[in-house]
Length: 136
Image (cartoon, rainbow, N blue to C red; front, side, top):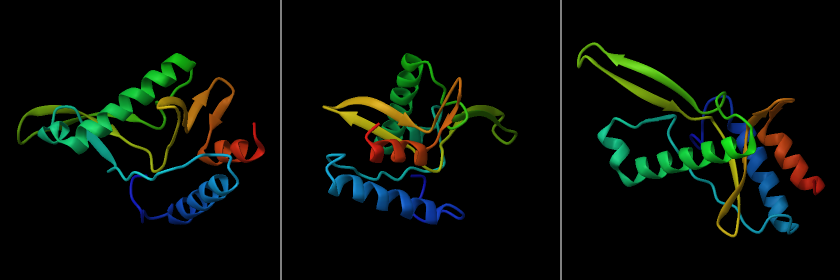
């Protein structure tokens, strides 16, 4: 999650965590954790070299590799923008993160990332949680 109290998505976040609690209690998932990230990160910043920056960039790379392997796209959800600073006369690539994502792991291996886009449309966080509840 980008924040624990973002404007406009707080109710959705509460609903997702409540649904994850139900999935865990019913044994449909073993466990879950919530990680809070900022809204953006850049490769070119000294902050990218911090443990938090490296963790975010590592996860983004892992998610994008999963998407490439699965033939789906995360481009609508993990966006890259070039930002130019006239003061420093530099350009940086900023990676903008979605308000919420779900990454599913089994035995430490990434199995699924949501949201993502397939040829037949977008799979939302809610879509994925409903399919997990249905056992599909």
